Image 1: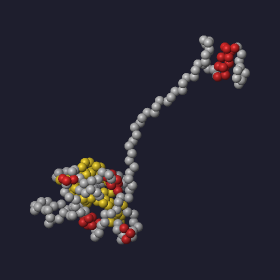
Image 2: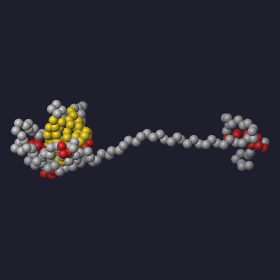
Image 3: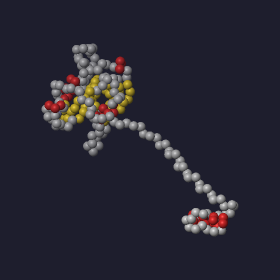
Image 4: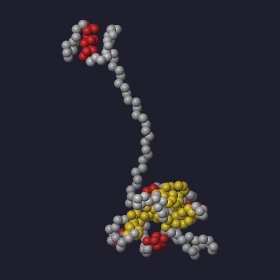
Length: 227
Ligand SMILES: [Zn+2]
């Protein structure tokens, strides 16, 4: 259902020509979804421009081109200067879709960010969920296909492709719980010496045993023999 001049339009009210919402590098924007979901297609870069990929019979690549995913949804962007929500077609990349996956819905507001180009590297479009509005307070969703047919200059566009990127694996970090204190070995029992003082410092085991033996019976044991 596209918004047409002949319907629901009060004379004298401003009409907005709906275009695809695209950010320049180094810019941010706030977009509110009007639909419960986004839908996607595959495109490829040919002669300095994204072209709609028509599948196995694609005239642009004979079905063999390297494709990227683009998602679309009817939306509004926030014009902070005028304090107005301006109707637009939200366009998301594979990376932005991963940011939004599981958070998307009618009335959901996202901040889109496209970083500055550094050394010819093209930063990815990022999306961050901000808040949601009650769906019943919004205008109905409108048909984005005429806008897309216009920008891709094709007569038919089918939005039936899911983003091929798999779910991100998201896990919480673990807190650093200290290890239990190392268990100290119990001190060796002191030999009973009937009160005789034995200086143990600096002695080997054999010397100690001989010393003790002398104290008990005056004769050292033979090496390695049990008494
Ligand atoms: Zn193609």
